[in-house]
Length: 399
View 1 (cartoon, rainbow, N blue to C red):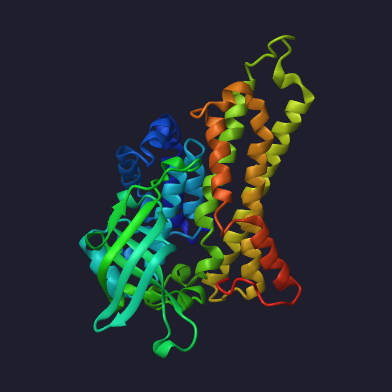
View 2 (tube, rainbow, N blue to C red):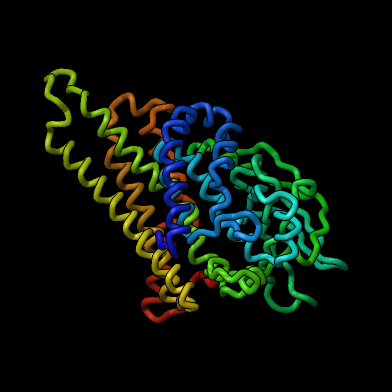
């Protein structure tokens, strides 16, 4: 991660140390978290006490305002013990960054009442209706996959606003909705990231004030209202180009945790019939070495790009389309490397790796679940970059 001055570096180091101390704690809670299908209340309390949700929150509202990507490192560290917990940490922390792009009046109202209040999101709506009316917007609908929603006090929902008069293309908006205006439905039953509590959000009929909305196009171009309000260029980063750093930390941590688990397990395991130490077999050693190299390469790719776009932002520069597409390329490939590392290690778990509560089984399921997010799917990211590299328009205009 980049650091601007000793204070920021010291805060980042202290947060990382807190995350390391919590790894065995969330590992111990992982099986129960999967049974509950959400992180336990004790884990949410630990995250709040450590300040994890506030790493990207503006300083003027009680946050740490650290470099973008700090939450990725924290999520990866926690995910060594429980990938679902790492996912919940990283994604909840990122929402304070997005809300920092909103009109300052909304930030003052929400964080002014409670600087430690957390925010969820959902980008995936069903039967959504958004219309302008006096005082703001009328919003209805259902949204899916809102991770850690049960531990949050508000939600940011993506909705499309039809063009005025019916001509032209719709505009994408984020709408800030406080807890009183939505219901949470317990719908999260999944094979991977089981403990993220990624439930549905239902809005029956909410009036969203004008200053509780932001045009997403402004966020993708670094022109959001909060970006003009806050001096820190953090809130002028291109939203969609860098958002997947929020997600990939859980895959990186899952792979690292799998490597640590397998290495510890093999130190004492013997082949049942021959009594030859499994760890002394060259193919086993090669699997461990190759997995470690894949994890190291993924981490290096992520750190390289996060340093790059943070430095550009501090210099007042905005990355061009080719560079933004390269961020997504490297994000997708880093995630692919993490999945490959877990796949490479998984056969070494033997029969016990089939148990649902086994750490290697959990890492396998969770790494694959992370890689299924559309922002990390390798084929899509590779095609986006390839088109731009060959002089064609980017297939995803949001990048």
